[in-house]
Image (cartoon, rainbow, N blue to C red; front, side, top):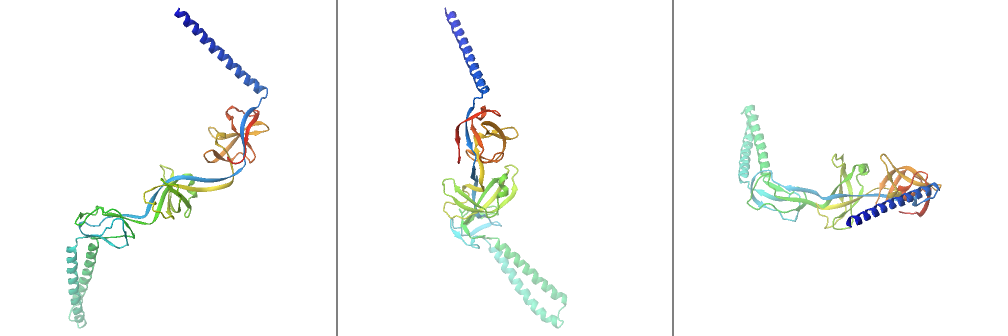
Length: 355
């Protein structure tokens, strides 16, 4: 009994599949007959007209201090004086850190005393030389001693200066890393100093836009947590394409003033690379990509005609056509997958104006 029911169900299923196949075949044959009879395919289209196109691109960037230095000392020693006011402004040349230098100061005074003595000897020998009371060789030796002592004194001054850390430029001191009495070496970080009256903006642009970047070019940027736009001006570029990223590094100086502009912050940079008041734009879905080129379908005398085109700037829903069409051409935007060269077409919807 069960076997009989199973057989009946199987026969019914096979019959349904055969009937569906016959129905599909009839539908395909009907479509072919409609084409043979010259029945037009309904499509949507867009009439091309000149449109103003502004080429804007967005790239990532970072804010950088105009000047920033990690303060370190040139020699090792013990800190005896500390003047690192965290978060405060200091003038260039301000003494920030002083190391122990009593031994160097004592040596400096010793050299000064020796120089003073040699100068007295020089004065006496100058008088004796006039009356031939001393040989020229002895006098020259005294002169040589004086010059040697002067050179040693200069060396000692340099050694003393190396026990001092002074502000290299006007700026704001960062977080202090040492305390009074600390024993430091040339590799010990003391603090940072940043110039905050101006800030730089570093970003990179794709290789194809590298030729359009030039000093003085205006750029806009916003921070990650705000839509407010700030102004900056390009001051220089690397003039070299990075082989790994195929980008060129660019640096601009920020013209805007705001407490939100902090070195190290992320920036979304917006660049206007040019504009075209007579650009020909079409919807992106109209493009038919091929292996070596791109094509579109235009309407000519009520029939579909394939045209090879060259594209330019791509936007969200439109793309620029730089070669292959003229203003006034009607471009097929929907149903292009079912069309062949010379097929009859009928417009269901035709759009004009801006996309």
